[in-house]
Image (cartoon, rainbow, N blue to C red; front, side):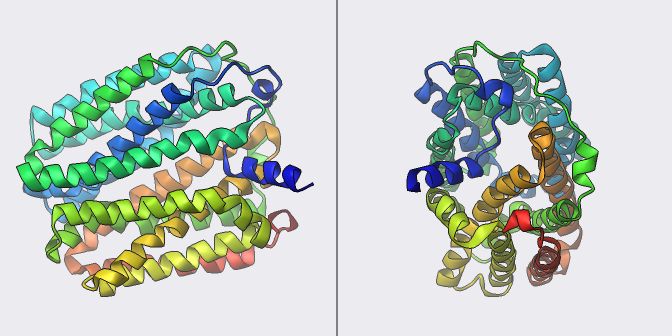
Length: 406
């Protein structure tokens, strides 16, 4: 009985398996080639995104323009993944789309080295992120294709993505500290090239292109707990906008070195790794509703600490450890929420909608508004972020009362 419970709970923290895929005999898992792709994909996030604001600031952009540029990938995330998923469904060539997206993302990013004008970089960000957003969702499908009826092994592969982020964010911090942030484009291009090469090493799955039975996604979205879930996700990711866009700039203003900033970013991801290891036990012990609400309340505490006590290194380290909850537990519980509230034929659409609405709309709105009001002070911006999370917690308290979430 215990083993059955453990297997059930493990599968709740990974994306749902397409029934048409799960019903087939899965081929041997190319563990290191799949793990290598995760490693380099999230290494790119660690080596680039914490330092994008510093690079743009070094190029002379204002906080408002930095916020605008950093919001662009969030905006393309609203549309691009759904378009690429549709193309993958009708063509059955997911691996080819991954390889094409990786290659064209690399080619478009070369534009960062050609011109540093605002409109030019905006165009580069639009094209680069449009192709880049095609990559991960399709790779997740291929990974689950190989895992077949053992989706609980997903975390063993995904773990290497977190390792890649940690290695890159620390290594890049040291590199920028030693040689200057001007090497940023070279770091990005190196990692993008590594991702493309690793995509070429992935063997083509034998059962791509299977399509599950379609059901009404709109009917699922119109449920009251789903609406509350999406609203809470938008508010949480909007609150993260200040963190993703201006945390590195804020830390540098307070006197932290770029190496120290890299370590601060990595602390959050290390905490995320540990929380994913025990996540199935948390869901079994406390239920989805309580985990989601607790994540939102702890997110409010995190932003309040960063906004008003970032000079205290120990409080700042504690705040970074809360990333395990502001991202880790909320994301894992969100995957399980979609599994519970959406029927099998709409779970894929539910996952896409969750990413587009929360990370796309919420993230873009948060990044833009953080840049718009950053001149008013970090205390105000992170204070508003904390209030948004408390509001999300209130929505969750009343909106997540559906018996399926207990």
